[in-house]
Length: 183
Image 1 (cartoon, rainbow, N blue to C red):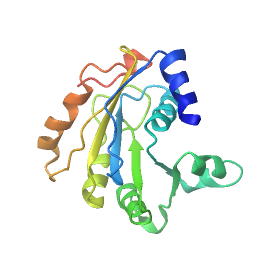
Image 2 (cartoon, rainbow, N blue to C red):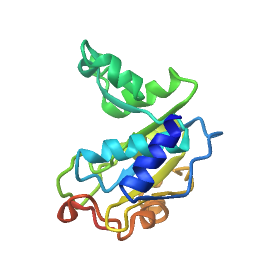
Image 3 (cartoon, rainbow, N blue to C red):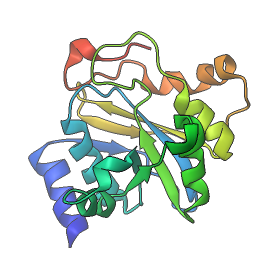
């Protein structure tokens, strides 16, 4: 029932297309979403996740998961990130993968909704440290399509690997076009 509602909203009301899908046999991965220019991206992601019927997660600082919002954030796939004890974000996030049988971490390598000219590299090193593939997902408001790419296993050579990952996002336009990351 929910899937039909998500499809109705996504396809009919909003007029979007979904190109590609996620292999639900991949239980752990880092899903990178580019461009991320507006808060509405979160709701588009919830619709897409519901249509694909694939659990997709996110992390947030543990304070976000306290009462009263903690229940909601967990119910939509959130996991608290504990950075106590001097852990950096990469190490703390990679540890979250070990605590779950299924954990597909969605994040934006831009690190902000503002205009950036370079991506943050944490997503890459999380995938490397957790030994999980990266799945690229483009939110293209210009064409009203969400494009799900093929899983990519990182090699440890960031520059070379990005030559395979970044083309997936070419010409994708964010909700606020002037903030879109340019490939």
